[in-house]
Length: 250
Image (cartoon, rainbow, N blue to C red; front, top):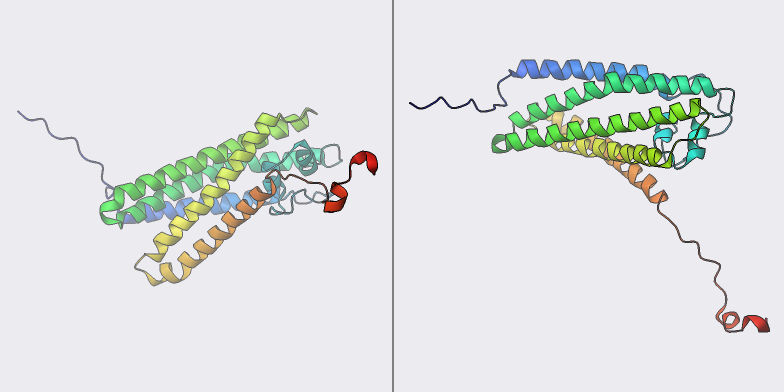
């Protein structure tokens, strides 16, 4: 007697209305989290004695902290040794906690639900599309949490009057680079999916907006990465005739 076959995984198990509702709830959760986090990440109300250290990045303290090139950048962002140090650390800690507990779960759920909705309209490639979206969403969440852990490490070291270890800083920066690269790539993917959508608003409004924002984000990350490349500084060139004269004869 043959045993009944195990039910295959179906992307259509949940009704479209349930998936759309999930997308709306997750989007609202992410938007509320961003609104709550923004004042902390911008350190509202704290007087800054010197400008933020990196001109190639958005002038947002927490973004600059995540991309810190050395301890000096950490000290500048967190106002180490200044009167506003304690308040600056408290702001960043509050924003980091909200990001970890609210924003990351909300946007992860949002991306998974969007991947499911897009996959349902992808025909034979549906499972591949959903799998790719799922992996990207999980990868983004992992690197974001890694970045948040690095920020928490920097805050703890500053509170104790210590320096952040170079290894911890490098991991934080690598996570930040990876996070924003993934954000841009996911945005491009969603933009392409919107451009192929049968609805006019998807092709004419959502697709161009997503593609424009994503390309700008990717270009900005790449531009900042280029500034970190080692540069060999050569001395000023000497005239050929002068180079031929032995040093002792000069």
